[in-house]
Image (cartoon, rainbow, N blue to C red; front, side):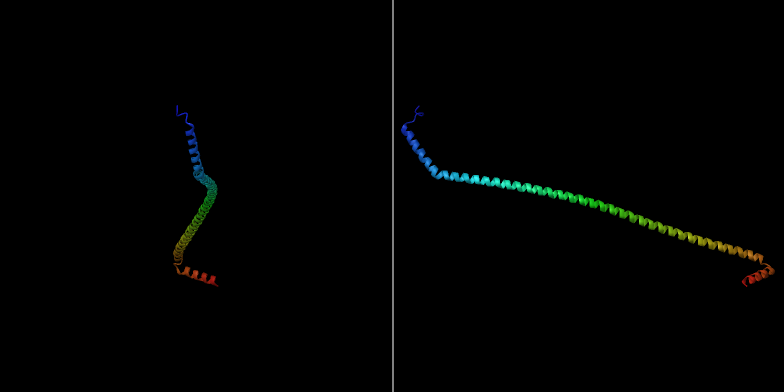
Length: 162
């Protein structure tokens, strides 16, 4: 049981050694420990400030990114709308050009048909005229076979000229 009941001298020497150790620690170690704790607290505070600043910058960057994305979407919609208008305009222009070209081709075809028809009518008239002259010649020859008929025809024509 001696372990649990120390001598009074031992207690005094233990108290003196503890007091000396406490004074040495208080003079030399305590300021270093407090300085380290203060630096650590300062470092933690700066880290918290840096984290808050980084968070605010990140929030700002997110807002900016949202704004850029919204603007890009608006531009995309504008570009798509413009492309659709351009497509419609180009299709309309192509349709008008095709109609114009078709109209030109139809007009040329009508003109060609009209010219061919006129040429055919002219050829037909020429042939009819040639047949009519041939028939008239044969009729006149038949009628003017004798000299009396020929004289009557000459006198009639001379009378018409006066």
